[in-house]
Length: 331
Image (cartoon, rainbow, N blue to C red; front, side):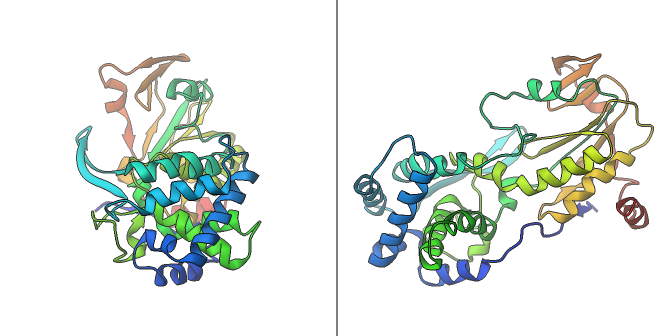
């Protein structure tokens, strides 16, 4: 049986406000059909764009026109969804309709991008590649790697609302913050169990979509608290930490005879993400396999024969021992 490490991580102070927002509308775009909510959302987007140096310098009239185009769509379905096999795995792709894509790229992404990512979170950020990230870890004596299970799908809409609400609340009243954050959340997430996505069946099903122009940036910034905690634990143990989207990499410059460095990943117990233990790997012999690259003697080459990849040691058989976890956490 696959074991997962999972526990809530984000302080959810405003989940009741999101529930209230959802109870007031039957589908995402209905908020723009209600004069008071529409005005709140317009003011919210305009102010947040101004405060985050919107490169387009849009005024309220232009934002209003873009939102009107969104409301006038012939379908209330904001995303087109289908399943596609990628590297042997079935993925649910969600592509925003053109009218929504304008809003996401022109306003929402700009707001998100002007918020910080952690300095060790590289995936999807401008100017970074996997090889460049790996160089930050060299020299390497041992490696621990793992990934977050169904990463985007794990970021539920109530977490996304909390993220947007905390931004809006710096400038607005509770009502405007709720409407702005609620609207941004409903256009930034999809229901993985309802391909129609034109109405709410259960808003807790909504999560970040794969295929949206804002999901990667939003994901990286929402994991900021995780990155802080993991890096602190790594620094305490003289280890290097980095994250490439949903892949967590921890290295030691010296040879580690056992996988005690796995204790660093226990910080994910504070996070609301599942870590499949059978996909946690420990390596203490070169060449090392990291993110499709083979590393030996500080030389990084694209993996060709999967020898290093297949030599990785899964920690599933002996890692998840509660007594050891408690001992190591309290060490």
